[in-house]
Image 1: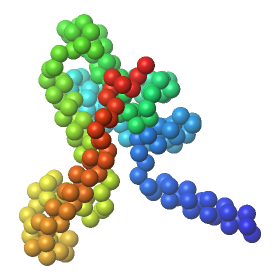
Image 2 (image 1 turned 180 degrees about the vertical axis):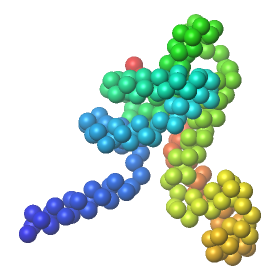
Image 3 (image 1 turned 120 degrees about the vertical axis):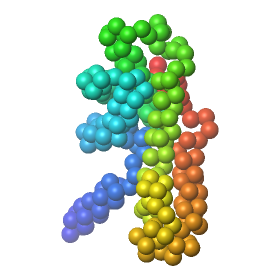
Image 4 (image 1 turned 90 degrees about the vertical axis):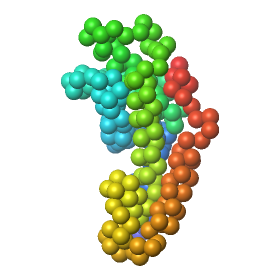
Length: 207
């Protein structure tokens, strides 16, 4: 009886853990332990990010972007032990993607600066910065309560009026502005918590 109870409690704890948001650092730690589910989750979490860098920042073709995608995650799998800080996995993946995109452009005959680490600021750098910010905001939004995600999505992404939001969510229209304000404050807190001062950059994460 006690063994069965312990098993049920362990299963419940496991289910609860799966339902909680998993940070990048926790995901990497599980990958280091050989957790295949964590590897799949890692690829799913960063796949759009890698594609966006390849296509939007470096303007690769879909086929070249697919090749870069495959190579990036092959190297992540092979070299994860070279990552010094688990929470720095995103800038590390960005650095890998950037270098592989540059290699792809060089192999196609396009003129690229000789040293990938000393590239001047270009349009690609601007797009990379925008992608970083968008990714940060997306992750911060995912950490908000459902009602905040809903109201912010309706107001900013769908451009709905206070009246339309109130009708859809069955809320008094006069309270929408204050609710949006409170949710934006929560978003700011989550965003700052995810990006503390002195967070590691891509130059700090490899050896």
